[in-house]
Image (cartoon, rainbow, N blue to C red; front, top):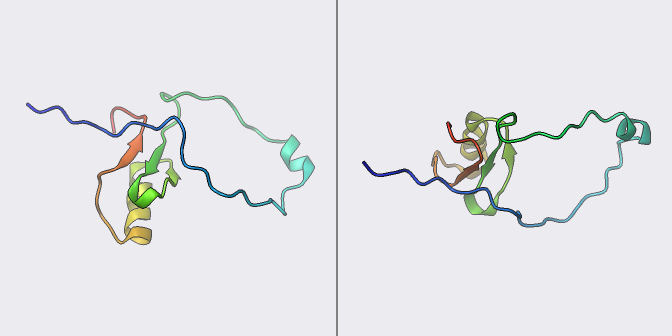
Length: 85
């Protein structure tokens, strides 16, 4: 039986120009609730079509994005660190 090869999560994604946040206040930044996570706790799916690299929480989310933004239902080139998806 042939083994499926999944795309690997790149160590560095292409850079893009940063936009200045004109809405977030200092209080909102200081009240952040961020935490460190790992691949077993946080699913991540990245659209690898046409150098898009948008991030999604679910495979369904990236597929809806592809249909809407790329006019494609291709399920290849989804970059993920989830092994059971």
